[in-house]
Image (cartoon, each protein chain N blue to C red):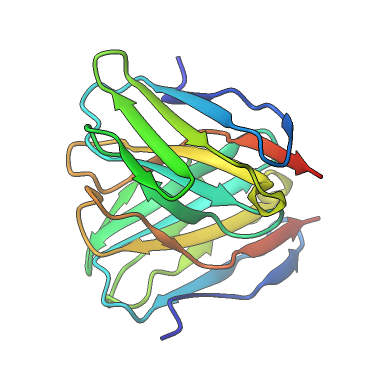
Length: 111
Length: 114
């Protein structure tokens, strides 16, 4: 089983749609969880951290289910500018010093 | 504040050549890492460092060396380049334990080995 697995998509949605991405991780000892965004041929950029209680940042909501080892990202009211690849990321060791990335889910928002 | 700076941005090497990819950060971050990104493979960890003088191997360390003599710099050395090392290389840094913090990435080095 891969350490971090994501549905690669692509997800093609119209502007204004709500879209959800899912991610599972294999290391039950993981303590830190993130969603990154990567635009074509650019470096990944931190979108948001994911906390056990769930957290929201504007149109973006992240959820964590430790029992199921499952992370989700919900994007409401999609914008054209949300088109990108979304990477699920977890730390790989107890020290939290190395991050493991999923392969990413591609989102395309159209007008 | 430059963040994480990688040089060069593009490089073409011949098989067997060696080179060093440079990475520098000016944020006084303890943790630094090198990743490579290949189509369909996602980002894979090559080496990482938790502070000056301390390095460790990641998922795909073979063919690469690193050292961390200062907090600011974390160069990646390709010992004898192979076509399989054609990839985009990203350097990243973080304040400390990743709990609550993400990594800041450099803009990448696009390496082609012919």
